[in-house]
Length: 418
Ligand code: ATP
Ligand code: MG
Image (tube, rainbow, N blue to C red; front, side, top):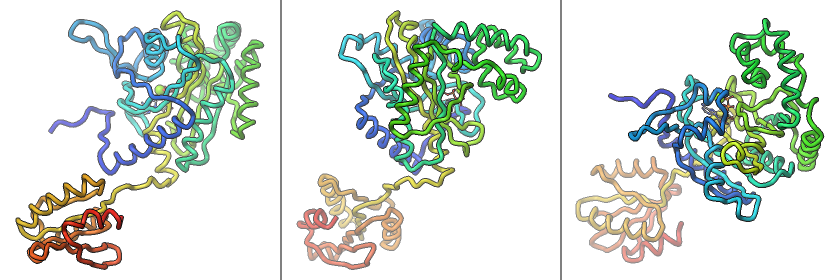
């Protein structure tokens, strides 16, 4: 017996119908907000992620599935969607069209992490990216889209955290200050963060280690050191959120794990999820297109973990509509009846009537049980008598009422009944 690789999941029925539901709800809200789908490859050249995510990030340092293909090129299974979407936008010269461009994507991502609740090696994200505008109102639109999606699904008690992480104008000054402060408190940091002071001090701000949090709480805050432009942007975002009654909490220690983020950063969390409590996160990345394709194109987006969304729905006991039902189950008695029924079921299906038939030669009782189990609205019973009279018995499974219908009229009659 060969098992699936660690950290991967089979999505089998009835679970898969929940996925279909979440994805179709997502597609309809994306459409409502006028976002269009983009599908990029599941693997890319490794350089894309090294450049687009940044060498000094958890993803690039330790989480990528990287391998050489048969021609010796380094290939990586995508760990996130944004770098690929930006690459595609640049490669296809979509910037030459009217802007902004509003994309969404849904699909699997791959990260070599320690599997645990809400953390897998193959997981699924849905996300959006908007290119070509710096308008802070778009930041609010992106956030609102994500939150409204979750609210429409019936979730509550979600918390939105926002921050601004500045830009290349103001961040360097702040980083100098932060580094100075962290150097002074170096001995109180965890070993990992001691290493980060020079390489990526911002990451220390979101270290989960308690000792580091004590240091971080007293650290200088980026939002107190924003340049005029970033400050105005952050204030406009807050106003836009207030304008559409979306509550937020400012978290000055919220940083994104990725280097290309500028200005707005946000996360939506549900406390009941435990350690992996972020359902979606995102932010503005006005410097990413420059990094990947030497073009100055602003962008903003979010990525939402579908597995974590499902966990949240379970924790909150949110019902997912179950579409498991049949219009018709045909119960047959005898070989001849089965042949007639096979022809009939074909006609039902051609007429968009969802029907099923027995393929295990069950007894009549067994077939009626199957009809029940499959939640059939009607059963059509065809046996020797029915064949002789050219009629079928149609039984309403809820009320138990039965009627006889001519075989050559049955499709039309059932169409009217359902
Ligand atoms: P975390 O802090 O949980 O590691 P992250 O900062 O690495 O999150 P992002 O890169 O922002 O996460 O990805 C966006 C979302 O994708 C997360 O909020 C989460 O819902 C989901 N996600 C990320 N990594 C995983 C994983 N290994 N398994 C399942 N879902 C994940
Ligand atoms: Mg992570």
